[in-house]
Length: 115
Image 1 (cartoon, rainbow, N blue to C red):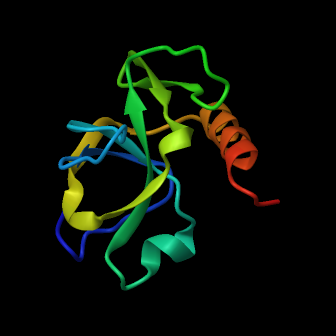
Image 2: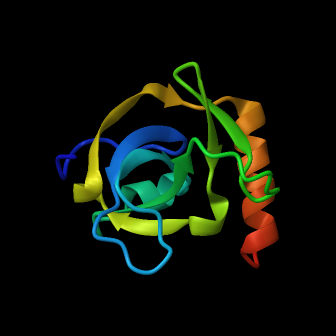
Image 3: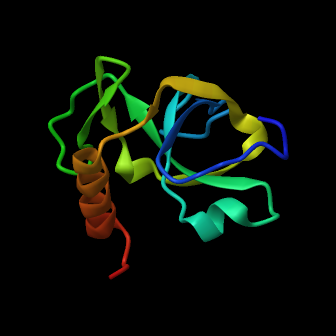
């Protein structure tokens, strides 16, 4: 991603997660921007994202999402701030549905001590 490219909540990007440490998600995979408009506009060049997987672990903290017609799962247990330089290109999915956003918000509230 170029430093000046616009970043908005709920966009889907291809993200390069390598190098990873321990059990962190690795490789190039879709990631959903979950930062607020304020977080997306900060000059720190970071993006708050949730990586996605195609593996269904039947975990309530990994809600299902449709990404360009393919089933995926938002790994809310692996929310992270990444350099915008790791965001390679926009995903075909572009953004996710309101229902999927609510499911992700619910999962994040279960994992992060926020209201």
